[in-house]
Length: 131
Image 1 (cartoon, helix red, strand yellow):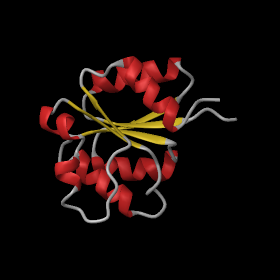
Image 2: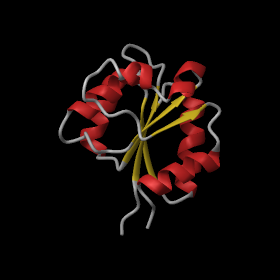
Image 3: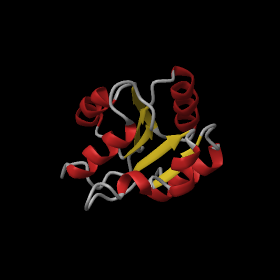
Image 4: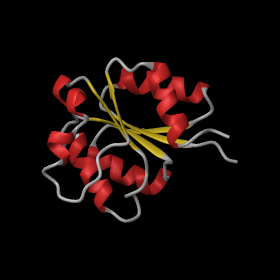
């Protein structure tokens, strides 16, 4: 079985480097995008098995990106994990935002920043285990 591909969508280069190194060390292939608009292009090019999405991105929010991906047939079932430092989003697992979008499934996981490495690896292992 091939290594799983993870797309990191975050505009903070330190977080991208940390997550990329952590995931790479655990057998994942990693790519990144620092804007929601670049993430859509990366989805086509990289074809990830899962996506880590920061909420606060320049321009369009990560939650808008999540809704857009869920509404596209090709990407609707790709596991999406929200990574945020926003306490309100963490407390309600994005439900306040998602509930305003009829028929849209929420994220497959929500993690706070700083990211707990064991929690991230556990979520990804459950969603798309490495061979």
